[in-house]
Amino acid sequence: MKALKEHFKDEFLIGAAVNQNTIDQDADLLKTQFNSITAENEMKFEEIHPEPGQYDFTIADRFLKFAEDHDIKMRGHTLVWHNQTPDWFFKDDKGEDVSRDELLDRMKQHIKTVMTRYKGRIYAWDVVNEAVSDDEGVELRPSKWLEIIGEDFIDYAFQFAHEADPDALLFYNDYNESNPDKRGKIYRLVDGLIKRDVPISGIGLQAHWNLYEPSYHDIDTALKRYSELGLTLHITEMDVSMFAFKDKRTDVLKPTEEMLDLQAKRYKEFFGLFKKYQEHISCVTFWGISDRYTWLSDFPVKGRINWPFLFDEKGKPKSSFDAVVN
Ligand code: XIL
Image 1 (cartoon, rainbow, N blue to C red):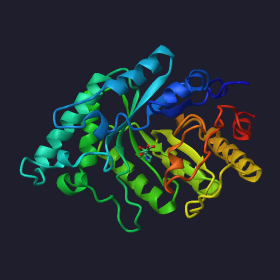
Image 2 (image 1 turned 90 degrees about the horizontal axis):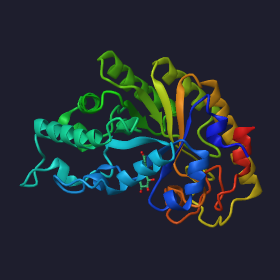
Image 3 (image 1 turned 120 degrees about the vertical axis):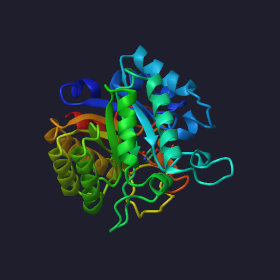
Image 4 (image 1 turned 135 degrees about the vertical axis):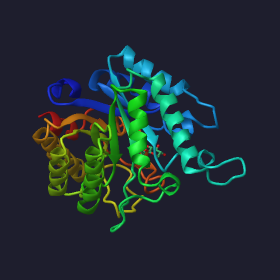
């Protein structure tokens, strides 16, 4: 069996999100198949900076050591996000919102502290995550960042990140990236950043897709549009759920042959597109390693099992794997 990272060595890096369990359980797969990792949660604000002035780098350090020991690169995820960021960060001693200047200063300190520690070792950062709204007619998602600082919080985040590590690749990362309305907003946002000379290097497409959505055409168009911006593209969180977005079933305890076949077909299409845009895409990261563990077995339907990856629950390659490498 040829490894994924070997198969795609001339096209893009092949990454996986890891957590404290999977990095041990699937260590062999990680070492043989992948050449990039991302911490699934452990570098997010609430984990790495849980209390004012208190940082906890223990787990992130461990992941980076694993990566360096095995010739694997690491992406940093994520610095500025509306989720998994503690409330205290936006508040003063009296529980009131801090001023714009104070929040900018705090943002700068957070970015600087985290990025300086890993300077030259983490090659790419998701600097701003999910700032664009899913609602039609609304460009940016309501958040404390937007409310207190204003729209330019995004510009500042990239500037602070660039000051902290001028050699790191800096990404804007989002989901529903191929939806026509949302991709238009992401395109406009990034185009504006480029025109204002904000130091952004790339766009991250999360790629939380499923057997039915989004369409091949929408992904093709999104990749084409984003490519036109001239930045590098990373697929940052890929999984192909067995269930359509609106499907709420919880009674499927094992994937059917039909599901597995359809998944392989979808993976083949997606990787066909990645190859089509290979000059623009420099990394494809899955949001997990094997079907042994996926965040989709809890989201969006609590407790529902899912099988979104190329390797099964025992770490064996699925027909989806064959579809991708053949
Ligand atoms: C998810 C993790 O996988 C879960 O374990 C956690 O409970 C919630 O966050 N977009 C992102 C990722 O940018 O950080 C999210 O990760 C999935 C959606």
